[in-house]
Image: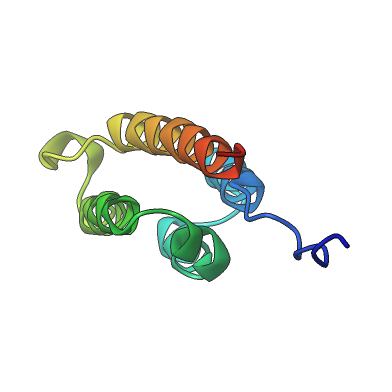
Amino acid sequence: MEAPAAGPSPTTSPLRRALGRLRAREIGIHAFAGEARAQSALLDALPERFGQALEQILQRMESGSLFAEESCSFSQADLHRLLDQWLERADAELASLQRPT
């Protein structure tokens, strides 16, 4: 007898879509950060260090949004690239967790 099917696996897709909307300036940094923090299923599926790293990036983004691009030590473009790297690593981690042992 097979085990009942689990619910859908957590995915980075909602966060990727939100990042796309942020880049397109459809949402602001604080709205993006709120959406990112609300990804509880994704964050719960990943090791704790992923949540910690994401929170650090989000805090830098929020802090940087208070200043002009030139006067802030946190380049928003660099932080977007860090988010891209975080998403790639999160996808790899999720894939490794789904492989049968």
